[in-house]
Length: 285
Image (tube, rainbow, N blue to C red; front, side, top):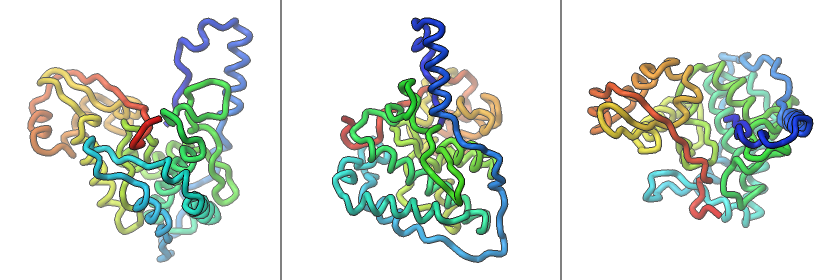
């Protein structure tokens, strides 16, 4: 989820200094080459990948019973456990040694979602405590987040989180539910799933994640029949949700349940959008 510097950040700087900062920021945030053909697959390969280490970490550090309905991650507890930090690094290293293109397509999708989420967890734990993942970045421009910094090396190719989401997952699978599968360590984000993704549970977990998010206030909140607020995800990536407000509403109606489903059925208004970038931690520092 790429974020850019606020418009006012550079406005008061002298021209040359502003241009210099932008250039340095672009250098530090520039992703690696995206000319690798990641869409190759081997549908005849019956092999499955072992994500049990990721599952063990989710079981130990994911808080799923918070009254807010948001899944929280106990980053402080994980940071204090050197053995489990090493376990996380080991799991990521194991995934990075593989070439996902050698596997069937459903195995690949689970691979990329788990890798994205595990790398995000590691990025936050390495810098914790922070108030927001947007505070973590390698460039000089603040509040840009870690998404354009190289944090993975898959089959010898350096990758950013943006590469995984926007150059691999979204264009290859063209499935709007990907936005519910990848987690950006924020309150406004769809929940980090309590199960590791696998080829066998992909459909069930993605459908459940979509329903959970759409039916939570941070996904959709309707004020009345003429106005409401939805997650900014539906505006940032509108092309994945029908590329129009009508398309967004159609997507929401597909997953809405109960009272929300009835409200959306009669809704004929405009939508604002909002997003909470606070860290999805039990106690935000």
